[in-house]
Length: 333
Ligand code: PBG
Image (tube, rainbow, N blue to C red; front, side, top):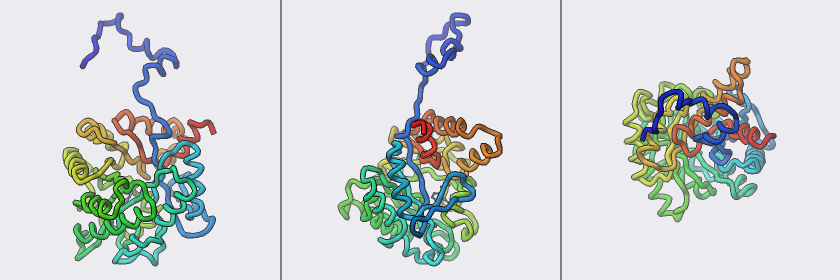
């Protein structure tokens, strides 16, 4: 629907940009702390915290420190936290058995957060790359990332996370039919209310570089992930993936990375009208931080503008490493 548009000077579009008050009054989108999911990295140790060098302001934390950080984040209004483990090298094996160990880092962190701040939503990552000796998200047989055996392992990983108390399962692996298999297993094991936020349209992207450092997966990875992650040139395929994952029982869907794929966010929201999230990934975060550190851009303003872009593109929420900084900014601390 086009608005009635009288010719100049009857129409002067600058009238509604004249003051802060009128700009605020006609603002179309808004972003609040309650729109954010905070991705965090968990590592072994007690009372231990260490910086991730490529991501200024991001840390790996031991389980006890994660629980404390979750409490602070929830108090600032952040409703959800998403866990990624830095698995010790000796627990990265060909069979990836650590992925469904009830006592692995992620599962211990889920329990600790749920004990410290039960109201906070805890989201997990389902994929084998933090546990494999190849850095790939699935089992590798004769050089190929094999689908169906990987899905069986992902189901075991999912159930161990649900048993530990996860609220939202986040499969980031991009295997075919993992959502259906996970949903069936959750129903059968009496986890009817455990949600699945599917990484439905996940692209084979250069913007994951700092993350692979953060979880210690960059050294191992040979080759690429193009046989399962999407080709950045494609857009219709993203809609097929979202439709497929919804039909298999995903409650919410994600587009990843974020800023280079805002067109996909908009198409997904328009087409399906389901809870839609974007992941502002490690490389996007690192670029803004690096430019800010050099004094080339205003880091706070770039953070706010980049996060608002997701709301404008139709997203209901965003996974962002900026979550605590944004919350602190909004709360004036
Ligand atoms: C792997 C996974 C990745 C991210 C989340 N889960 C990296 C990859 O696919 O290699 C990236 C997140 C980020 O870059 O912030 N399952």
